[in-house]
Length: 360
Ligand code: UD1
Image (cartoon, rainbow, N blue to C red; front, side, top):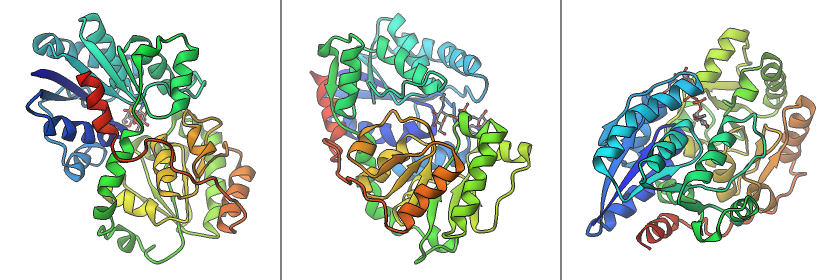
Protein backbone atom coordinates (compact mmCIF):
# COMPACT_ATOMS: atom_id res chain seq x y z
CA UNK A 1 0.00 0.00 0.00
CA UNK A 2 1.44 3.36 -1.04
CA UNK A 3 0.48 6.72 0.39
CA UNK A 4 -0.05 9.76 -1.84
CA UNK A 5 -0.39 13.20 -0.30
CA UNK A 6 -2.22 15.55 -2.69
CA UNK A 7 -1.77 19.29 -2.22
CA UNK A 8 -4.21 22.00 -3.37
CA UNK A 9 -4.39 25.67 -2.49
CA UNK A 10 -5.96 27.94 -5.05
CA UNK A 11 -8.95 27.86 -7.36
CA UNK A 12 -7.15 26.58 -10.48
CA UNK A 13 -5.85 23.58 -8.49
CA UNK A 14 -9.20 22.07 -7.62
CA UNK A 15 -10.24 20.95 -11.13
CA UNK A 16 -6.78 19.40 -11.56
CA UNK A 17 -6.79 17.37 -8.35
CA UNK A 18 -10.40 16.10 -8.64
CA UNK A 19 -9.74 13.39 -11.28
CA UNK A 20 -6.52 12.30 -9.53
CA UNK A 21 -8.34 11.85 -6.22
CA UNK A 22 -11.05 9.86 -8.02
CA UNK A 23 -8.51 7.64 -9.80
CA UNK A 24 -6.58 6.95 -6.59
CA UNK A 25 -9.86 6.03 -4.95
CA UNK A 26 -10.56 3.55 -7.77
CA UNK A 27 -7.21 1.96 -6.96
CA UNK A 28 -7.76 2.04 -3.20
CA UNK A 29 -6.44 -1.50 -2.87
CA UNK A 30 -3.02 -0.13 -3.76
CA UNK A 31 -3.14 3.53 -2.69
CA UNK A 32 -4.01 5.37 0.46
CA UNK A 33 -4.46 9.14 -0.01
CA UNK A 34 -4.35 12.29 2.05
CA UNK A 35 -5.72 15.61 0.79
CA UNK A 36 -4.10 18.80 2.08
CA UNK A 37 -5.70 22.20 1.36
CA UNK A 38 -3.26 24.98 2.13
CA UNK A 39 -6.08 27.52 2.45
CA UNK A 40 -4.45 29.96 -0.01
CA UNK A 41 -7.97 30.48 -1.35
CA UNK A 42 -10.62 30.40 1.36
CA UNK A 43 -13.77 32.19 0.15
CA UNK A 44 -16.79 29.97 -0.49
CA UNK A 45 -16.81 31.10 -4.12
CA UNK A 46 -13.06 30.61 -4.61
CA UNK A 47 -12.76 27.27 -2.85
CA UNK A 48 -15.60 25.43 -1.11
CA UNK A 49 -18.01 25.59 -4.06
CA UNK A 50 -15.48 23.72 -6.22
CA UNK A 51 -15.28 20.88 -3.71
CA UNK A 52 -19.06 20.60 -3.83
CA UNK A 53 -19.39 20.90 -7.62
CA UNK A 54 -16.59 18.45 -8.34
CA UNK A 55 -17.32 15.95 -5.57
CA UNK A 56 -13.87 16.35 -4.02
CA UNK A 57 -13.82 14.92 -0.48
CA UNK A 58 -13.28 17.31 2.42
CA UNK A 59 -9.56 17.94 2.89
CA UNK A 60 -7.97 15.78 5.60
CA UNK A 61 -5.92 18.80 6.61
CA UNK A 62 -6.54 22.53 6.07
CA UNK A 63 -3.51 24.69 6.75
CA UNK A 64 -5.52 27.95 6.61
CA UNK A 65 -2.60 30.04 5.39
CA UNK A 66 -4.78 32.69 3.71
CA UNK A 67 -3.61 35.75 1.77
CA UNK A 68 -0.47 37.83 2.04
CA UNK A 69 2.61 38.83 0.10
CA UNK A 70 4.24 36.07 -1.93
CA UNK A 71 6.89 35.52 0.74
CA UNK A 72 4.33 35.48 3.54
CA UNK A 73 2.02 33.07 1.75
CA UNK A 74 4.81 30.75 0.62
CA UNK A 75 6.58 30.79 3.97
CA UNK A 76 3.39 30.21 5.96
CA UNK A 77 2.54 27.26 3.73
CA UNK A 78 6.01 25.81 4.21
CA UNK A 79 5.84 26.15 7.99
CA UNK A 80 2.40 24.62 8.16
CA UNK A 81 2.94 21.72 5.75
CA UNK A 82 6.32 20.58 7.08
CA UNK A 83 4.96 18.70 10.13
CA UNK A 84 2.17 17.17 8.02
CA UNK A 85 4.59 15.68 5.51
CA UNK A 86 7.12 14.74 8.19
CA UNK A 87 4.51 12.91 10.22
CA UNK A 88 2.75 11.09 7.37
CA UNK A 89 5.86 10.33 5.31
CA UNK A 90 3.95 9.66 2.08
CA UNK A 91 5.52 7.80 -0.83
CA UNK A 92 4.53 10.69 -3.08
CA UNK A 93 3.56 14.32 -2.68
CA UNK A 94 1.50 15.36 -5.71
CA UNK A 95 1.44 19.07 -6.56
CA UNK A 96 -0.47 20.65 -9.43
CA UNK A 97 -0.15 23.85 -11.43
CA UNK A 98 1.95 26.87 -10.59
CA UNK A 99 0.56 28.67 -7.55
CA UNK A 100 2.42 29.59 -4.37
CA UNK A 101 1.09 26.47 -2.64
CA UNK A 102 2.71 24.35 -5.39
CA UNK A 103 6.26 25.60 -4.85
CA UNK A 104 5.92 25.75 -1.06
CA UNK A 105 4.91 22.09 -0.78
CA UNK A 106 7.59 21.05 -3.27
CA UNK A 107 10.39 22.77 -1.38
CA UNK A 108 9.37 21.20 1.92
CA UNK A 109 8.81 17.66 0.61
CA UNK A 110 12.08 17.61 -1.31
CA UNK A 111 14.08 18.58 1.78
CA UNK A 112 12.31 15.86 3.75
CA UNK A 113 13.44 13.40 1.03
CA UNK A 114 9.86 12.70 0.03
CA UNK A 115 9.32 12.26 -3.71
CA UNK A 116 7.34 14.96 -5.52
CA UNK A 117 5.26 14.54 -8.68
CA UNK A 118 4.42 17.79 -10.49
CA UNK A 119 1.26 17.72 -12.58
CA UNK A 120 1.35 20.35 -15.37
CA UNK A 121 5.14 20.41 -15.50
CA UNK A 122 7.17 22.10 -18.22
CA UNK A 123 4.94 25.03 -19.16
CA UNK A 124 6.91 28.24 -19.71
CA UNK A 125 5.78 31.77 -20.53
CA UNK A 126 9.41 32.96 -20.44
CA UNK A 127 8.09 35.99 -18.54
CA UNK A 128 9.80 36.17 -15.16
CA UNK A 129 7.66 39.11 -14.10
CA UNK A 130 4.88 36.55 -13.72
CA UNK A 131 4.95 34.96 -10.24
CA UNK A 132 3.67 31.67 -11.66
CA UNK A 133 6.69 31.44 -13.99
CA UNK A 134 9.02 31.51 -10.97
CA UNK A 135 6.90 28.84 -9.31
CA UNK A 136 7.04 26.66 -12.45
CA UNK A 137 10.81 26.96 -12.84
CA UNK A 138 11.51 26.22 -9.19
CA UNK A 139 8.99 23.36 -8.90
CA UNK A 140 10.27 21.65 -12.03
CA UNK A 141 13.88 22.00 -10.88
CA UNK A 142 13.04 20.08 -7.70
CA UNK A 143 10.28 17.59 -8.48
CA UNK A 144 11.24 13.95 -9.10
CA UNK A 145 8.50 13.20 -11.59
CA UNK A 146 7.47 15.80 -14.18
CA UNK A 147 4.04 15.04 -15.64
CA UNK A 148 3.47 17.16 -18.72
CA UNK A 149 0.24 18.29 -20.42
CA UNK A 150 1.65 18.75 -23.96
CA UNK A 151 4.73 17.86 -25.99
CA UNK A 152 6.01 21.45 -25.96
CA UNK A 153 6.37 21.13 -22.19
CA UNK A 154 8.61 18.05 -22.62
CA UNK A 155 10.74 20.04 -25.06
CA UNK A 156 11.05 22.94 -22.61
CA UNK A 157 12.26 20.61 -19.85
CA UNK A 158 14.75 18.81 -22.08
CA UNK A 159 16.09 22.18 -23.26
CA UNK A 160 16.67 23.08 -19.61
CA UNK A 161 18.78 19.96 -19.18
CA UNK A 162 16.23 17.81 -17.34
CA UNK A 163 16.96 14.08 -17.58
CA UNK A 164 14.23 12.63 -19.85
CA UNK A 165 13.74 9.77 -17.37
CA UNK A 166 12.03 12.28 -15.03
CA UNK A 167 9.51 13.38 -17.69
CA UNK A 168 6.24 11.60 -18.51
CA UNK A 169 3.80 13.06 -21.04
CA UNK A 170 0.37 12.37 -19.59
CA UNK A 171 -1.89 15.02 -21.17
CA UNK A 172 -4.12 17.66 -19.63
CA UNK A 173 -5.80 16.54 -16.42
CA UNK A 174 -8.11 19.58 -16.30
CA UNK A 175 -9.77 18.28 -19.44
CA UNK A 176 -10.68 15.08 -17.53
CA UNK A 177 -12.79 17.27 -15.27
CA UNK A 178 -14.20 19.31 -18.13
CA UNK A 179 -15.37 16.24 -20.05
CA UNK A 180 -16.74 14.60 -16.91
CA UNK A 181 -18.79 17.68 -15.95
CA UNK A 182 -19.83 19.04 -19.34
CA UNK A 183 -23.25 17.41 -19.47
CA UNK A 184 -24.07 18.18 -15.85
CA UNK A 185 -23.24 21.85 -16.38
CA UNK A 186 -25.88 22.17 -19.07
CA UNK A 187 -28.63 22.07 -16.45
CA UNK A 188 -27.25 25.18 -14.74
CA UNK A 189 -29.67 28.10 -14.86
CA UNK A 190 -26.96 30.75 -14.67
CA UNK A 191 -27.33 32.01 -18.26
CA UNK A 192 -31.03 32.58 -17.69
CA UNK A 193 -30.45 34.28 -14.34
CA UNK A 194 -27.93 36.65 -15.90
CA UNK A 195 -30.21 37.41 -18.84
CA UNK A 196 -27.98 36.05 -21.63
CA UNK A 197 -29.71 32.76 -22.40
CA UNK A 198 -30.32 32.29 -26.11
CA UNK A 199 -28.32 35.44 -26.89
CA UNK A 200 -24.92 36.04 -28.38
CA UNK A 201 -22.62 37.07 -25.57
CA UNK A 202 -18.99 37.06 -24.50
CA UNK A 203 -17.58 35.68 -21.23
CA UNK A 204 -14.63 37.28 -19.55
CA UNK A 205 -12.19 36.82 -16.64
CA UNK A 206 -9.35 39.10 -15.59
CA UNK A 207 -7.16 38.82 -12.50
CA UNK A 208 -3.45 38.81 -13.37
CA UNK A 209 -1.51 41.39 -11.33
CA UNK A 210 0.08 42.66 -14.58
CA UNK A 211 -3.40 43.55 -15.90
CA UNK A 212 -5.34 44.70 -12.86
CA UNK A 213 -2.74 46.10 -10.44
CA UNK A 214 -1.64 48.78 -12.92
CA UNK A 215 -4.29 51.50 -13.27
CA UNK A 216 -3.37 52.48 -16.86
CA UNK A 217 -3.42 48.91 -18.12
CA UNK A 218 -6.68 48.12 -16.36
CA UNK A 219 -8.33 51.31 -17.70
CA UNK A 220 -7.11 50.53 -21.21
CA UNK A 221 -8.60 47.02 -21.05
CA UNK A 222 -11.85 48.41 -19.59
CA UNK A 223 -12.05 50.84 -22.53
CA UNK A 224 -11.70 47.95 -24.99
CA UNK A 225 -14.42 45.99 -23.15
CA UNK A 226 -16.83 48.91 -23.42
CA UNK A 227 -16.40 48.92 -27.19
CA UNK A 228 -16.86 45.16 -27.48
CA UNK A 229 -19.96 45.45 -25.29
CA UNK A 230 -21.52 47.71 -27.93
CA UNK A 231 -21.75 44.54 -30.04
CA UNK A 232 -22.40 41.80 -27.46
CA UNK A 233 -23.09 41.76 -23.73
CA UNK A 234 -20.13 40.53 -21.67
CA UNK A 235 -20.54 38.35 -18.58
CA UNK A 236 -17.71 39.15 -16.19
CA UNK A 237 -17.29 37.16 -12.95
CA UNK A 238 -14.89 39.26 -10.90
CA UNK A 239 -11.99 37.83 -8.89
CA UNK A 240 -11.53 39.43 -5.42
CA UNK A 241 -8.24 41.06 -6.45
CA UNK A 242 -9.90 42.61 -9.50
CA UNK A 243 -12.88 43.86 -7.53
CA UNK A 244 -10.56 45.57 -5.05
CA UNK A 245 -8.63 47.30 -7.86
CA UNK A 246 -11.82 48.43 -9.62
CA UNK A 247 -12.89 50.18 -6.42
CA UNK A 248 -9.43 51.63 -5.82
CA UNK A 249 -9.06 52.98 -9.40
CA UNK A 250 -12.71 54.09 -9.65
CA UNK A 251 -13.34 51.89 -12.71
CA UNK A 252 -17.03 51.54 -13.57
CA UNK A 253 -18.41 49.60 -16.52
CA UNK A 254 -21.47 49.92 -18.76
CA UNK A 255 -24.62 47.90 -17.98
CA UNK A 256 -23.86 45.72 -21.00
CA UNK A 257 -21.02 44.25 -18.95
CA UNK A 258 -22.67 41.97 -16.41
CA UNK A 259 -20.38 42.11 -13.38
CA UNK A 260 -20.97 39.16 -11.04
CA UNK A 261 -19.25 37.34 -8.19
CA UNK A 262 -16.78 34.53 -9.00
CA UNK A 263 -18.82 31.60 -10.31
CA UNK A 264 -18.71 27.96 -9.31
CA UNK A 265 -17.23 25.39 -11.69
CA UNK A 266 -20.50 24.18 -13.23
CA UNK A 267 -22.08 27.62 -13.62
CA UNK A 268 -18.98 29.04 -15.22
CA UNK A 269 -18.63 26.05 -17.54
CA UNK A 270 -22.22 26.64 -18.62
CA UNK A 271 -21.44 30.32 -19.24
CA UNK A 272 -18.30 30.00 -21.32
CA UNK A 273 -19.47 26.95 -23.23
CA UNK A 274 -22.41 29.02 -24.51
CA UNK A 275 -20.34 32.12 -25.30
CA UNK A 276 -19.55 33.35 -28.78
CA UNK A 277 -16.21 34.58 -27.52
CA UNK A 278 -14.10 34.38 -24.36
CA UNK A 279 -11.72 37.10 -23.18
CA UNK A 280 -9.30 36.12 -20.42
CA UNK A 281 -5.91 36.32 -18.79
CA UNK A 282 -6.36 32.96 -17.06
CA UNK A 283 -4.20 29.98 -17.98
CA UNK A 284 -6.83 27.30 -17.55
CA UNK A 285 -9.50 29.01 -19.60
CA UNK A 286 -7.20 29.13 -22.63
CA UNK A 287 -7.14 25.34 -22.45
CA UNK A 288 -10.81 24.81 -21.65
CA UNK A 289 -11.90 26.93 -24.64
CA UNK A 290 -9.52 25.00 -26.90
CA UNK A 291 -11.02 21.73 -25.67
CA UNK A 292 -14.52 23.00 -26.49
CA UNK A 293 -13.65 24.83 -29.72
CA UNK A 294 -14.68 28.26 -28.43
CA UNK A 295 -12.73 31.31 -29.66
CA UNK A 296 -10.55 32.77 -26.91
CA UNK A 297 -8.65 36.05 -26.80
CA UNK A 298 -5.86 36.05 -24.23
CA UNK A 299 -5.20 39.52 -22.83
CA UNK A 300 -1.50 38.96 -22.18
CA UNK A 301 1.72 39.41 -24.12
CA UNK A 302 2.64 35.73 -23.89
CA UNK A 303 1.28 32.33 -22.99
CA UNK A 304 2.81 29.29 -21.30
CA UNK A 305 0.24 27.25 -23.23
CA UNK A 306 1.27 27.79 -26.89
CA UNK A 307 -0.50 24.63 -28.01
CA UNK A 308 -3.82 26.45 -27.50
CA UNK A 309 -2.70 28.85 -30.24
CA UNK A 310 -1.00 26.41 -32.63
CA UNK A 311 -3.69 23.74 -32.37
CA UNK A 312 -6.63 25.31 -30.59
CA UNK A 313 -8.82 28.39 -30.67
CA UNK A 314 -6.67 30.84 -28.73
CA UNK A 315 -5.19 34.14 -29.88
CA UNK A 316 -2.71 36.06 -27.70
CA UNK A 317 -3.70 39.68 -28.23
CA UNK A 318 -1.91 41.63 -25.49
CA UNK A 319 -3.42 44.62 -23.74
CA UNK A 320 -3.52 47.25 -26.48
CA UNK A 321 -7.14 48.42 -26.74
CA UNK A 322 -7.21 48.63 -30.57
CA UNK A 323 -5.79 45.17 -30.91
CA UNK A 324 -8.26 43.64 -28.45
CA UNK A 325 -11.26 45.28 -30.12
CA UNK A 326 -10.08 44.37 -33.62
CA UNK A 327 -9.54 40.73 -32.60
CA UNK A 328 -12.95 40.56 -30.91
CA UNK A 329 -14.74 42.04 -33.93
CA UNK A 330 -12.83 39.59 -36.13
CA UNK A 331 -14.34 36.71 -34.19
CA UNK A 332 -17.82 38.23 -33.95
CA UNK A 333 -17.88 38.97 -37.69
CA UNK A 334 -16.66 35.46 -38.51
CA UNK A 335 -13.48 36.81 -40.16
CA UNK A 336 -11.12 34.89 -37.85
CA UNK A 337 -10.54 31.19 -38.33
CA UNK A 338 -8.75 28.82 -35.97
CA UNK A 339 -6.99 25.48 -36.29
CA UNK A 340 -9.49 24.15 -33.75
CA UNK A 341 -7.94 20.73 -33.13
CA UNK A 342 -7.99 18.94 -29.78
CA UNK A 343 -4.40 18.47 -28.57
CA UNK A 344 -2.99 14.98 -28.06
CA UNK A 345 -4.02 13.30 -24.78
CA UNK A 346 -6.59 15.94 -23.88
CA UNK A 347 -8.93 13.01 -23.86
CA UNK A 348 -10.32 12.64 -20.35
CA UNK A 349 -7.91 9.85 -19.38
CA UNK A 350 -4.98 11.84 -18.03
CA UNK A 351 -5.56 11.00 -14.35
CA UNK A 352 -5.29 7.32 -15.16
CA UNK A 353 -1.94 7.93 -16.90
CA UNK A 354 -0.78 10.00 -13.91
CA UNK A 355 -1.55 7.25 -11.42
CA UNK A 356 0.04 4.67 -13.75
CA UNK A 357 3.21 6.79 -13.63
CA UNK A 358 3.07 6.92 -9.82
CA UNK A 359 2.67 3.13 -9.68
CA UNK A 360 5.64 2.60 -11.97
C1 UD1 B 1 -3.60 32.90 -7.38
C2 UD1 B 1 -2.45 32.30 -8.18
C3 UD1 B 1 -2.74 32.45 -9.66
C4 UD1 B 1 -4.10 31.94 -10.04
C5 UD1 B 1 -5.15 32.60 -9.16
C6 UD1 B 1 -6.52 32.08 -9.51
C7 UD1 B 1 -0.21 32.48 -7.15
C8 UD1 B 1 1.09 33.13 -7.28
N1 UD1 B 1 -1.20 32.97 -7.92
O1 UD1 B 1 -3.60 34.29 -7.62
O2 UD1 B 1 -1.78 31.75 -10.40
O3 UD1 B 1 -4.37 32.22 -11.40
O4 UD1 B 1 -4.81 32.31 -7.79
O5 UD1 B 1 -7.51 32.64 -8.74
O6 UD1 B 1 -0.35 31.55 -6.39
N2 UD1 B 1 -8.64 36.70 -2.00
C9 UD1 B 1 -9.86 36.64 -1.41
N3 UD1 B 1 -10.41 35.42 -1.17
C10 UD1 B 1 -9.79 34.27 -1.49
C11 UD1 B 1 -8.50 34.33 -2.07
C12 UD1 B 1 -7.94 35.56 -2.34
O7 UD1 B 1 -10.47 37.65 -1.11
O8 UD1 B 1 -10.36 33.18 -1.25
C13 UD1 B 1 -8.05 38.03 -2.29
C14 UD1 B 1 -7.11 38.49 -1.21
O9 UD1 B 1 -7.26 39.86 -1.07
C15 UD1 B 1 -5.74 38.19 -1.80
C16 UD1 B 1 -5.98 38.36 -3.29
O10 UD1 B 1 -7.32 37.94 -3.49
O11 UD1 B 1 -4.73 39.00 -1.32
C17 UD1 B 1 -5.07 37.53 -4.14
O12 UD1 B 1 -5.09 36.16 -3.74
P1 UD1 B 1 -3.77 35.25 -3.92
O13 UD1 B 1 -4.05 33.84 -3.61
O14 UD1 B 1 -2.61 35.90 -3.26
O15 UD1 B 1 -3.47 35.39 -5.46
P2 UD1 B 1 -4.42 35.30 -6.73
O16 UD1 B 1 -4.37 36.60 -7.42
O17 UD1 B 1 -5.75 34.72 -6.40
